[in-house]
Structures are given as structure tokens and as C-alpha cells.
Length: 119
Image (cartoon, rainbow, N blue to C red; front, side):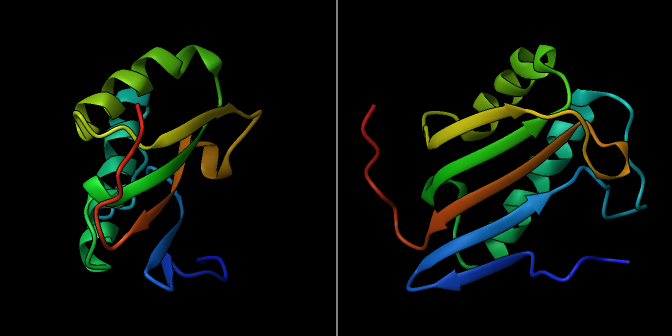
């Protein structure tokens, strides 16, 4: 049963994307390794951004929860490949556990228009 929330909410041109778990939408399976799980949450992010009329270039902030701090380098590499030159503000938070035994959860905030980001 799904929780009582929307996958995203828009308010005044800002899109708030709920936490995305690495549950494959095609078969409801959760892959074992952090690489596949990271790819799934980023694919889900991309899908929600598209549905909301936004894109990854409009993302201004990302929070990533991981169950092992040793995943940081792997997650960071895949995340950097996904975003390319675009660098939204971000935090990665190690947590003791996530729902369904997942290793990663990702939430984000995006605008509808491209925002200048200071590097």
C-alpha cells in the first residue's frame, strides 16, 4: 500500500519531489546493488521532472539518504554522470535504515525555469 503523499507537488512554480525509493516501476523489484538502486531513483526523478514540466537542469536542491556511508563515492559518481555540468545544492545523509530494505532514497526541489547556480 502506498503512503499518503503525492510523488510531487507544485507551488508558485516550485516543484517539491517526494522521496523516491529504488523500486523498479516495471516489475516492483528492488535490485540488490547500490549502483542499480541509484540509477532507478535518478530515472524516477527524471520521469517526475518530465511529468511536472521541468527537467534536471531546473533542479535546485537534492537530498539523498543512504544506509551506508561507504556508498557515497558510488552514488556521487552516478549522480555526477546524471547531472553533468549542472550542480544543484545537495546533501547525502547516512541513515540506519530505509523502507523495504532499500539502500537509497532521493528527494528534490526543482523550478520550472532554469535557475543560475553559483559554483
